[in-house]
Amino acid sequence: MTEPIFEAFEERRITVPRGEINVRVGGSGPPLLLLHGWPQTHLMWHAVAAGLSDRFTIVAADLPGYGNSFRPEPTDDHAPHSKRAMASDLIAAMAVLGYGRFALAGHDRGGRVAYRMALDRPDAVSALAVLDIVPTGEVWNRADATFAVGYWHWGFLAQAAPLPERLIAADREMFWVAVERMGLGRDAGRYPEEVLEAYRTALEDPAVVEAMCEDYRAGASIDRELDDAAASEGRRIECPSLALWGSRGALPLFYEDPLEPWRRFAPDIEGRAIEATHFLAEDRPDEVAAALAAHFDRPARSNVPD
Image (cartoon, rainbow, N blue to C red; front, side):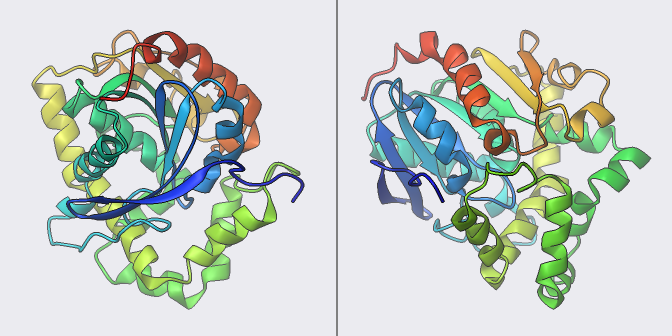
């Protein structure tokens, strides 16, 4: 590794009603919450956070179930792992830090938590960015053969317990090969070994694997239902919204225009592709940081701690 990870950031554990959220906090300026994707942790943001910390107070959090945050107890309806529940946890964590309103960026699963937060709590989110996703309900409603092959892990991880947990435990190294095929670690020099090792090691913890599967089970059930309900009610994301995606990822294969599926929730959303895999924040951190800074700078400047 050539550069320290999250240098000058403070690691904190913040108590919220359901448990403890692990975060890194650093920088100065208006607050910006960063949420990671699967199968990562807050570490995925290390280079982007370094590029933004002179403009924003960065809070990079481990989602509930991931990293060093608490593990929600699974239930038959998967509600404890819903993006609504996770969003509530993270709003509570930001309140403990003194932020009642903040800018928000999420990649992959974290992006799903982020847009759910913007829908449920428009008072809390000043501006939104989502990385390499379209809304969960849209994914399932438009799923076809290309999706089934390209994002097979959605259906696999959503299978009833303990099927995917047992299969992953039987050969974690081969499951990691599947993750690598999606692009994680592919761009040489972009992924510090200690970060990749943290992601790999997480698969050795049965509680983390269970949480990952519950995350996807929630996505296939309650998250999808909440999206469809919000769409039928005509609810909209009220804040300025940005979508970024990897030109070498799956979205350009699934959707002719990756912005189009967003428009029922965010008619004025803007966005573009970045030359990267699905893991664009790690592949191209400087470009992602610049795009986020341009998007968040004006609305975020109005935020101050409560």
